[in-house]
Amino acid sequence: MADTDVKYPIGRFETPARPGDARRAALVAEIEEAPASLRHAVAHLNDAQLDTPYREGGWTVRQVVHHLPDSHVNGYVRFKLALTEDEPTIKPYMESLWAELPEARTAPIGLSLDLLDALHRRWVAMLRSMAPEAFDRTYRHPQTGMSPLWRALALYAWHGRHHVAHVTTLAARAGWR
Image (tube, rainbow, N blue to C red; front, top):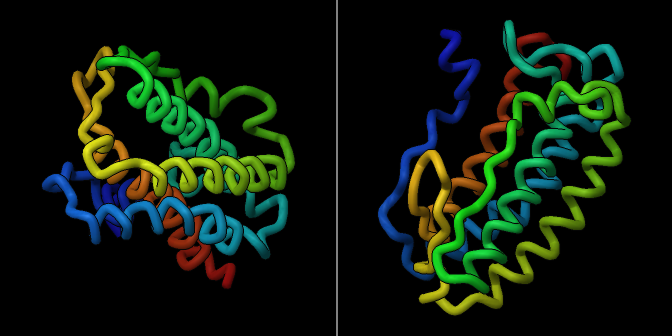
């Protein structure tokens, strides 16, 4: 498997066309399913496996697990800001540095699995309560510019699948299943 396949096992994110009602509902369902998919992917891994990088030079499985709620809590807040302010500028975070903090490298993964479960339940409740036109609201990222919420929805749905695939493809390559 090429390094790009290992780094992007489901492919890089590509901005889709603005989703219609059915596709938007499917993306919300992907966000809803992400915590269970991650939990299933790591269910039988031991500490040595959790501390294995998913690729050379990449994060460990443990860091990936802790990264998902770090990222998605930022996503949730970005949605809230865009829904309550006109074109807010969001604050990016240094995800690579967050992943190197001691708790991201060593804490039990159950903490982040539980956080992701609760966060996604709340996020999905918000997403399902949004009127279709609310997905056209935007936020401004200082480096990447304006993002409508429909794009952010597609991005975070992809993001969950992307990192679950890091774990499942590592487990398959290593013969852990």
